[in-house]
Image (cartoon, one colour):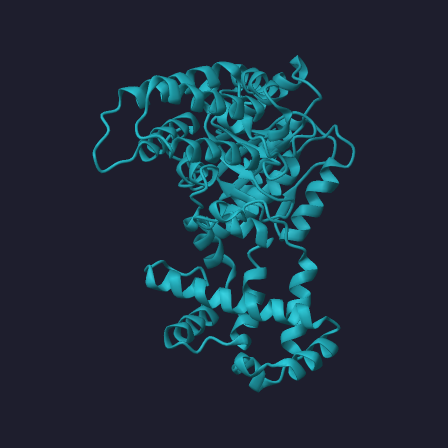
Length: 435
């Protein structure tokens, strides 16, 4: 997400490092680059114009401290303005009622039903909620079946009455939730190809009849600037409490996210980051800007790690690391743990400084991980414990046993050495390890 935008902004930052001070001429050249980067990311023109004017004005008017370089001043201003554009602080969902009721709305194809599944799964894990879905999309073929299938996968109950009146179904579903001690209801509503009177009348009727905690618009991040019109169209009738942007992982432009809050004042509450049922995250402006500017997002990595990695295994790895006993057996164990975090290229993007090493756009073939596992499993226990003893003849045997090549064995050993060095650097820098 935001890959191209991040690359362009980081290039602009790099260019300003060569200047001794910020002047009208050099800041104008840099801002042209920033402007083009934002426009190519499909950010609304008015937002781009206002943003670049603000950055330029503040950069020229900034009293540069002797301890700060021009690039440091510029980065701080750019960062602050991006955070302001995205809404400063995250806006969490309301989760403190005895029964929280959310209604998801949106156009057809925005991903409402899948998002309902992700949201229920996310809130159950994070807040220990007991969620229930209500199937109110009675028009789209197989919509109810899709929600029931998601419910089955997640072990979350789906209340449905078939193709009845959506308002009555929603009311009956909420009554059922109260009677059966559910504390979270997610109402999956119908969508249309465009906003129309029938759709809005139905949604407003549900809103009038049920005390909703959240009315959330689910919107496809890839739809571009027309998303603003869609948000305003729904908000005029429903008074939205927030949006969820889906498919943000598929859209390297990200212009919708950078325009929505500023133009509509509707907060982005969550973002869809993968097709998996755990592929949803809270939207945090400061962390997102850190990713865009190549500063990484170590906190998100740690939180993700804490949710999927075995705590005892992590403690044992830390103990061995501190004693300098981390060997290839431990490397294999940690590799299996890291696989739980998702695609490795996504993990790399969360690490600070990765963009400076040119690794932010790297693609890692999952088969590579399988080959690494095969190589280590073809080693003896002694070899895994003391990789230094692995010389030419041993490498040939290991390559033959794992169905790989000596070159691949050499590559693994080099990667293992690099990993040990990285962990040592993280440890010496007092950075909490995510495994």
